Every structure is written in structure tokens, then in C-alpha cells.
Image 1 (tube, one colour):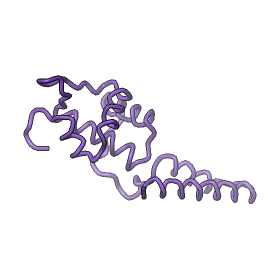
Image 2: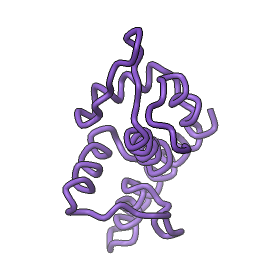
Image 3: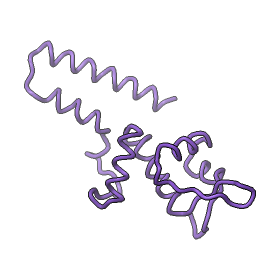
Amino acid sequence: MGKKRSYKQNEVCRKLDIQPYVLRHWETEFPFLKTSRGSGAARTFSAAEVELLGRIRSLLYEDGYTMAGARKRIEAERAGTLEAPSAPSSKDATPPAAKAAEVAVAAPASGALRTGIAEALAQARAILARLDGG
């Protein structure tokens, strides 16, 4: 986002393609976000915070993490116990929940159980497709 030192809330929302209420909610969900107040009590964000917000957006919207899962993932990355990916590979593009469902389908199971799991997975994918499309 350039060499700018701080960004106003509306600039951050435009860059990340999110609404201001989403940004305010993330501030309550991710306690390590430390926004400051500029002149006139407007929220301002540092370049590092904008980068962190972009990572949060990516985890939530692209990787399919829940709010709690994204918080844990970022905390682990910040603690150095988990490396942040530079660019997702094609095998990493599947959200964690979908990976678990694929493993469950691949595991040995009775025909009825396998069918039930496959149907649940299909329903979950249909719901995700609707959420992504709208």
C-alpha cells in the first residue's frame, strides 16, 4: 500500500473491499489489532496493521477459516510456531473443513456411512458456493 505511514478507516475498507462495520468487528475479534486515533478521533491503521487485516481477510474469505480459527492461526504465525504462507499452492486452496471432509470420505467406511458423508459434503459445498457467489 505504498510508503504511507497511516491509513484512514475508509482507505483500508476500500483496499480490502470490506465494509466499515466488518473492520470494526474484526477489531473486537482480534485483540492484537491496535488501531490509533488520528486528528478528529478518526481511526488510523499502520501499514503493518493493513497487511495484518489483509491476512485476516484472506483467512476468512478465501481459506474458509472461522473467526476463532483465523485468530489462532495468526497468533501462531506471530508467535513463530507456524509459518505464514507466501502464496497458497493448489493443494492448500481447499479450506480446512473441506480437507477434513475429504479425508473422512476417503477413509474406509460402510456404504451407508460413506453415502451420508458424501451427501453432507455436497450440501456443504453448495452452501459455500452460494456464500461465495452472493
